[in-house]
Image (tube, rainbow, N blue to C red; front, top):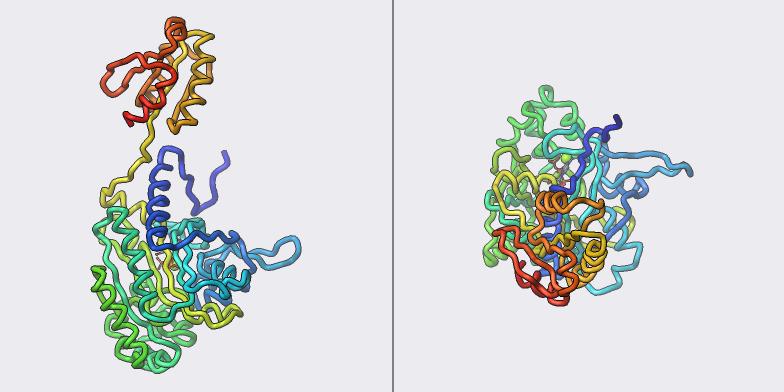
Length: 418
Ligand code: ATP
Ligand code: MG
């Protein structure tokens, strides 16, 4: 038997409503903040990610799905959403439009990682991007959108952790301090951290190896090295969050795994059992657009992992709302009424009722059994008598009561009872 590739998942019809619910809440929350959807290609030229995400990041070093296409071009399945949006923004000349640019995306992303709970090779993200605004209001807007999204999902056990990793100027001093601190421990740290030490010592703080993590709590903190501008920026972000009742903790260990960040970085972390820690991460990346060859456009955004959100929602017993439909199974007792049932189903669907009818020439008993299994709320029974009367016998499957309803009033009847 053929099986799915390692690290991928099937989303089956039975659980699709959970995904649809999370996506619906994402779209509604984004709309409330006036973010519009953007869709970009699943694959891009590899260079976009090596330049955009950065070649000291785990993603670019170890996790990318890269291949040569038939034209010998190096192609990569997107490992994240931000670089593609930035490319599309520049390529389509959107920098000349109204600022700030505000967009959200719902995408699949691909990373060659060791599969485990909440860590897949194909996974899904909801993300948002805000370009063109360099002030702290933009950071606070994006964090507030992320916070509203998680609250709208009904999540209670997620905490917002924020930090500032400064700008290119003040981080240079910090890198020196980190190197001085880690140098004596380097010989017992992992191979990756030895490379990080040379290329980007701050990334050591994001290492997931226990042997390295034990050194990070006493490491120098970026917050002590911020220049005055970065300090002001961070103070304003904090006071805007407080003013808009977004609770946060300051966590100097949050540095994010991607190279493009500067100043504000944040993560929403769950304390619910059985779920992977970080469900949503983001920050400011003022150099990304110039790194990929565009002009200097300040940017801030986040991405949330859908699979992890799903796990957290299940762990917290948060409700997944089904869309409100009035489900009706139309049951034809004989050949003539089967045809009427088929036609009537079409009428109901046009009116916004979810309707089903027999497609397998089943007996009356077998049709009832199917309607019950399918979870239909109502069954409208049609036989010779009903056709003559122009009315169906509508059975409410919840309480077994039934009522005669005229064909032309059936849609209204069902809609008023959903
Ligand atoms: P981690 O530190 O857990 O590897 P990350 O820093 O690599 O996460 P980001 O690049 O910030 O993650 O991606 C944003 C979100 O996407 C994460 O917070 C997480 O919820 C989700 N995510 C990242 N990688 C995976 C994956 N392999 N499988 C499922 N979800 C993922
Ligand atoms: Mg990762």
